[in-house]
Amino acid sequence: MKAYQITQWGAPLKEREIEIPAPKGTEVLIKVTACGVCHSDIHIWDGFFDMGGGRKVTLEDRGLSLPFTVGHEPLGEVAKLGPDASGVSVGDQRVVYPWIGCGDCDVCKRDEELLCNNPITIGTRRDGGYAEYLIVPNAKYLVPYDGVDEAVAATAACSGITAYSALKKQSHLRAKESLLIIGAGGVGLAGVGMAKAVVDAKIIVADIDPVKREAALAAGADEVIDNSDPDARKQLLGMTNGGPQGAIDFVGAPVTTAFGFSVLAKGASLVLVGLYGGAVELSTSLFPLKVNNILGSYVGTQQDLVELLQLIREGKVKPVPLIKRQLSDAPIAIQELREGKAVGRFVLINY
Ligand SMILES: [Zn+2]
Ligand SMILES: [Zn+2]
Image 1 (cartoon, rainbow, N blue to C red):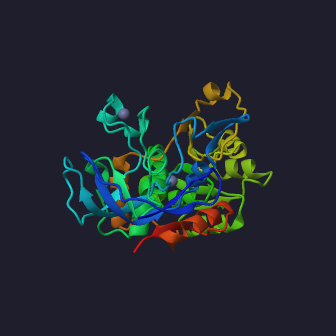
Image 2 (image 1 turned 135 degrees about the horizontal axis):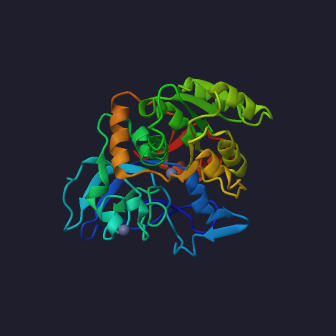
Image 3 (image 1 turned 135 degrees about the vertical axis):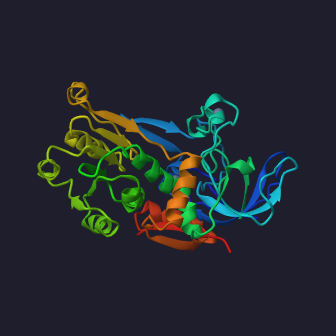
């Protein structure tokens, strides 16, 4: 089979001809028909994450060796079952829930595999979907997506549940309150498109790019602001009568997190999602004085994926623009994403 692999950190992905893996034990072999190209694939491709203050975590230190196949948003058809696999049949179409853990520890056993200390995430820890086939350790990580476009379903497994699970952390907000969404790029825009299905509050979107602010309005934002405007904080406080009752930072750059925290109403929380990286100085006394919180949110649970696919089926989510590319275009697509040329999300298609 063909796989599009990292053979050297940061160098163009290579098309390689490798053996189709044979499913062992409970494993299931999936013939990949679609796989989203995600911004975090670029971090894996580079081989490190920026932790701020000049600190880097390399993927080699984390035990990842090359060659490696990225792609954590795959879906496809069940091609073969391992001798102990059950729950699916050959030909079933399924989206892969990629954020899997060891399966044995306490958090895994209560279906919060996301919190496992020994994750085996598909496409970031074990070979992913930039290939014609991939192995999933167990059929329980395969979710039906009938009634949902395959490109939409593929991206639901990452950007979709990332946005959805962040919004769920603000689902307590009431109709008269405001939720500030910072960043209307890929994941942020997905969040804007599903915000009304999850949160009752008024949705205000902050982005420095006028094109993205337009896209946010088209996706259902009630109001937009330019957070690079020196008056942005003042405008927002006026618009919301003292600050939003919740905020989600889909960028995660020092400047956006500082902005999000600085505008919060008393009692409000900022959900930090974006992985831009860096470090930010925050006044410690403001946390108690304003009863503010900052929460991290990372992708979502398999239950989130099931719920989100249902909202999509019911037509409650405005889809983000998706651009279908052939699987063989993987090396070019990821390069174009890095260069910021993608208007919408790339999904690799293999048929
Ligand atoms: Zn992703
Ligand atoms: Zn575990």
